[in-house]
Length: 305
Image (cartoon, rainbow, N blue to C red; front, side, top):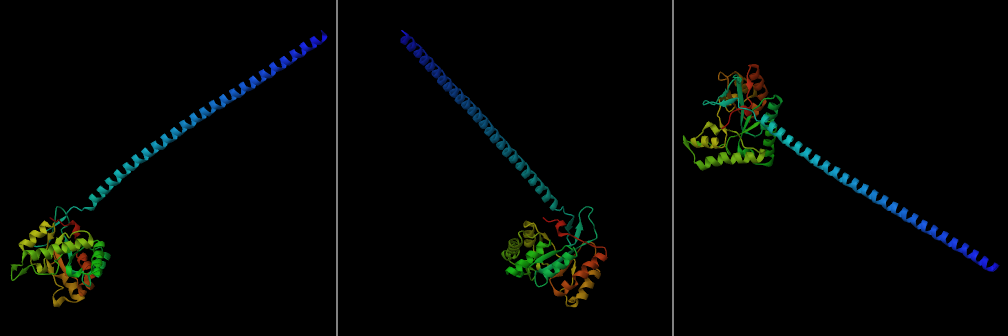
């Protein structure tokens, strides 16, 4: 009986121990499950936050790109507007026109006491030097070109330099061929070749067509006048010129006569040539004209068709 009591007591102790271990294991599993659940929830929350953050970042980047694109478009439109306004400012309104006697007449209230400088048969040997002299004096002029002076690459480069210095380039025919013979016009196809052929060549060299036409020896024809009009070139001859005359083929002589001739008056269209003596006298000619109160007309301000 005593043994039996001991056995029962031992059994109870073992049973209680087993129950205690089972509860501990259960609690441990529950704790682990709770911990895993918490970690999972935290991970999901973190993932959710990351996703939201990523979405916000992507949205911000997209908004930034759209804003930048709009700003660029706005800037481009402003640049285009500024360019258009600048182009308008660069196109000068005509202040003068060529009259029937080839002088320069003011339009409106433009200065009347003006003269126009023109250089023919260029760019021969002295054209570039003359352009440099005029540039230093801030004196505008028209350089009337012959095609046989821009045959080579070097000659074309010379013409390009003269144009880049800001001087107007005029058409003086391809080979300085007279458009009339014994008072009669030469064939129209030849006139066309002499005039349009040179305009094409000039455009090839400087990138624009000439705005002025002067016929060799001043011999215009009805066809050349109409062709020049179609090409939007102002036709002009001259008021006076002397440097082709033997008497004035020296620096002092040509400088004196160009300034002190009785033909000098308001609007005079001065004819000079690409010649050594004229090139040397050019500085004195410009200064002499200005001392007499004459302003030099900017060819860009002369009305063309």
